[in-house]
Length: 564
Image (cartoon, rainbow, N blue to C red; front, side, top):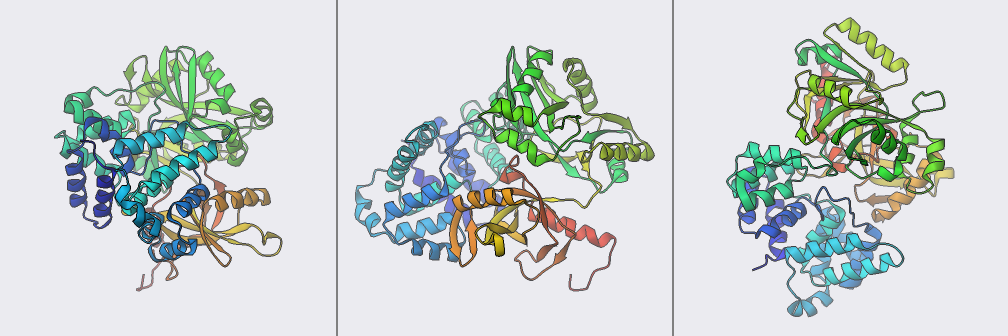
């Protein structure tokens, strides 16, 4: 018998009501064990707030403005009731549930509703993703309206949460992997390894459901299925990096560019951004360079795309992002914003995964396979003075700093660790999320130009404010940001607009200080936006735990009041 979507929604309610990790794992494992094989991947994806598999390049392209209009139509409730419910809960899904419960229309039709199933919901998401072209907005609106019209209040809550990609149940991928291991009696390490390689924990769960451990041990890379990126932690300096890596290590220029993953099979080449989005059409010259140079029948390589001027010097990151967003008039844009490719790693070559191969050996393999493509500038040393001189050279060349990579390190997709660390000779910036904005004053009175900045709580998934700024963006960027934020607006209070957390920005600041103004009890001093990080997903935003760690590190070199 097909599993009702309501069962998944009710599981979400149970997860939301607890912060006990073991209980979460037990609840999810018990639920997964009851599902049919074809239901497992959709259920896992939706529990993590994803309407479609991670590897899918399709998107729903449904704005909050459209979704809110449909909710109004389906419930026939005054929108002030939604705003009031949102004010009490701070959660869009919960506010939706409240107005569905108060809807007379819903109570009248409840007895005649067809029961939604997990598979039917997934098919609706797939249908939405397929709609494009003339009249697509109206078609999508009718499909979503039909879906929500069949929904009970709790189902509506979780449908909306999936639409906006913000579950807030506290269930994250690490806990999901533990639940999969428990549900299908597979070693956790095997689940984690398969998840790293496949890049989609839902697919791994489905394989475990069908053929158990044996299926997971056979998971391998597939060209044109982008792989989660290995990430680096920040180091406080060269000495810390050398000590962490046990002496001799590899130092590379950290370019002020955009990280890309390039897949090649025969003459076909695709380029993916750090968000694993297909950006092939936006970077035709990178495709051509890879096609003509990468010496392999099949390969997955990683590199950095840097925007350069006519002299070959790097230009600011924001200019590069214009290239990634363009899909029309590419030739003209490519001429105005030329780019250069540097390669730094290889994950897969001619049917063989290289992620377990030590970094130094991968680098050597990359050098043999890269043709005329330049590799990232690198030295291998254990000498702190030599490393310091190399850092100086990188900065003088217009780059951000250095990447430091342990020579024997494997490539661990999706994992941030100390085997790779980054060094920037300035106070570490933070990647934060805009959660609200205010209209400015004077000539900015029509623009949302004062931004509330938040860090993600790794435990709950909530976004906690850590500061506010009106500095850093140009007038053109503020105008574009105003347009984007209005499309994400949930409610307006006087001059303040609360928005769905979507936009990641890099923020510089002078220090982190104690503050009673914010729930997290910390605030950024003299915050200013240094760049808009459209290349980063919400999951890559810095956590409140990371902000707290930086706050505590400040006291290694300064005193603290007893109240701190």
